[in-house]
Each structure stands twice: as structure tokens, then as C-alpha cells.
Image 1: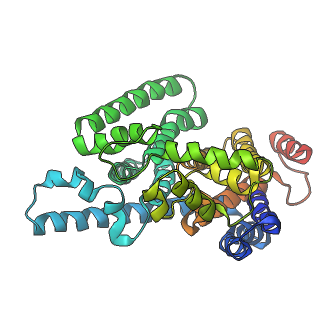
Image 2 (image 1 turned 30 degrees about the vertical axis):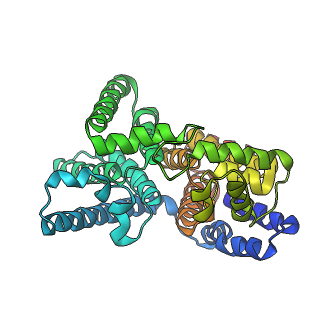
Image 3 (image 1 turned 135 degrees about the horizontal axis):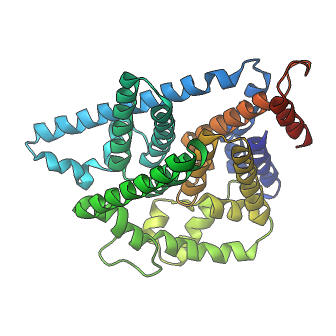
Length: 374
């Protein structure tokens, strides 16, 4: 029920909100944070049995969708008689790549990153040659789609999964050391290739540098995120403990943007683009503590019970929360609440005894005693 804590935080924020109608809309929007834990609690299924098939189906769906998007882009290039290298230009990357299916590039990248973690897991543990070839092809498709969508935060999270999660959770001894060396070289090669492409270099490196500067960017109509975050600090300092209440973020920031002449952000009614800062604005230090506490407990259980998928999922959430308000849009709320509740349910099903303890192994008994202590 950890995701439900975040829902109760939104409900609590309605009591002192200056925009109660919007606060109630936020409560309605975030119902998934409450409903998914309830659903997994009452369904009498062994979710551990369905974890791998679910992730395989989820990843295969993402791979097929990426193939469709590449096919759609290729048709446009052919129709306009453009060189194929055009696919790496801004016209076919990021939101322009995912626009045919109306999916936000960052959130689609989150789905792909988790899918890539699942298929890398299958690739490592598969012993059949045909399966390894199939899983390798799926991984290649997923990684290509990830590069094309050009979400910097998800790309960073994926590199962390490859370089940290896989060697820590899935490998041991010499294989771990060998993989760390290979994955580090692979990461450097990918970063080098990104630097050689002008459009991708602009998206991944140049715009990142612009986003992290406080000064205005010449010939750039958008304001940097760091500049917006800097001015948000003034609002946070006025109400640091409980914030301004649920549903107040956009109106607060619009006034703040206009006051500091951030007219592009004002006209587009941009939110904080940072889940941590968003919670500080709406629920203060209390809200930020609850969110960090939920993530911390998730990491704690993922590490304790060696759950590679859960740990990778939490890495994605934690990193993307720096650049997106994950809990303000359905595509983020459902992704977070479903998979967080699902992975925690799998862990609880593995550890809680379902009958008499006679006949179980000593290791199983120890794990159940450990869970009872928790």
C-alpha cells in the first residue's frame, strides 16, 4: 500500500488548498495510486508466476510499436524524397518520432527502458540459441527506439540499469567483472556515437547544457529548467513545511513565470517538470519526505530480496522524477502505481507463508522469519 500513501498525501493537500476544485480533480486523476494496491491485495493469484510473461508481453508490445514508428518515419522520408540520414534530425526524433501514436516521448521511453531490462535479463539466462537470437533482436529494437526518442533522463536511467543493476543482481565473480568492463566500453561507444551525430548531440548534450544554465539562452524561445526551478525556490521558501496544497501548482507557477518574464513558460502553462519540486510546492517538506520514503522502502526491498526488475523500475522512476511530474499525468500515474504495487505484491507472495511451515527448507523458513520481523 505504499503508493496509497502518495494518494493520501494529495487528499490531505485538499484541506488547505486555495483551488479546491482542481485539488479534487487531482484526487480523481490519482485514484490509480489507491486502486492498484487494492486490486493486487484481493486477487488470489500467484503473481510471481506471471511476472516474466507479463514483462515479456509488455516488452514485445513496445518493440512492435517501435517498428511501426520506424516504418512510419521511413514512409515519410520516402514520400518526401529525403535521404535516410534525415531520420536522425529533430523532425524524426523525440516527440516527433512518437507523435503518430500520440505518446509522450519520455513516458514511452520509460516503458521501453523497463522492457529492455526484462529482455536483457532473458538474454542473460536463456540457454537456447534461437531464444538468445530472438531476445538480442528485441533488445536491439528497444535500444534503437530509446535513442530515437532521445529522452535524456530515461537514457541515463537505462545506462545505470546496464552498468549497475545487471552486474549487481544477475552476475557474480569473474562474469560480473567482465560484464562491468564490457558495459562500460559499450556506454562510452554509445556516447561517442551520439557526439558524432549533430542532431543527437544537440538533443542529448547541447540542450542539456542549456537546460542546466541560469542565464537566458540566445535565440532560444524556451526558458531553461534550471532558471524556472531557481524562481520556484522563492515560492517554496514562503511555505516550506506543508506547501500550498493540492491543485495549486500551475496557477502558482503561471504568476511566478509572468513576474519573472518567463513568457514562454507562462503561455504554455508549464508545471515544475520535476516531481520532487512539485511535491515541495504542493505539500512542502512533508510531501517530499513521503515520496522519498516510498522510493527508499522500494529500493530497500528490491535490494534485500534481489529483485532486479523492481530495482530497475525504481531507478527509472527516481531519475525521471528529476525532469518530469510523473504523478500529474495518467501515463505516469498508471505506470508507477501498477508496477510498484505489482513488484511489491510479488515480493510479499514470495515471503509470506501460505500454510503450515512444515516441509519447507531452512532457507525458506529463515526468509519467512525475516519477513515477519519486518
